[in-house]
Image (cartoon, rainbow, N blue to C red; front, side, top):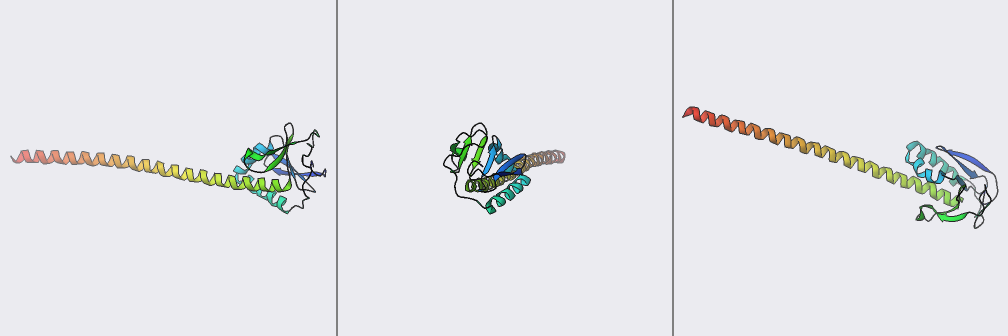
Length: 171
């Protein structure tokens, strides 16, 4: 663990193995795993698995904050502090070569935010799909209406011709 130097245990989430500290409950994400998290949350099964990881993190005993700038557990260089997605307000510690460290509170907030954001995104996607289907159905109805109007006009023209022909026969 970069923060308290305690051992970590692995927790599987999709194809990722997250390292969770046994003492402070912080989470180490290997180099590309942070970028893969939103994708992992987009699948219902993964969202459920992530929910269990989140529950485990929430219930895990955790220590107070670690050092201001912990060292990377791989190369031992001081990690840089950055904010997840530049706007989340969630502070992470990042080693460009090896990965990202999230303290316990940040990891809980990150998993919670990803779950909520993903659910909102899925809800929005579902609404968009429903709206697209409604628009498609409206298009079909309009096309059917045009076709019916055209048929009615043909029938009316035919009836007028028959009336005119009948009138000519009478004369």
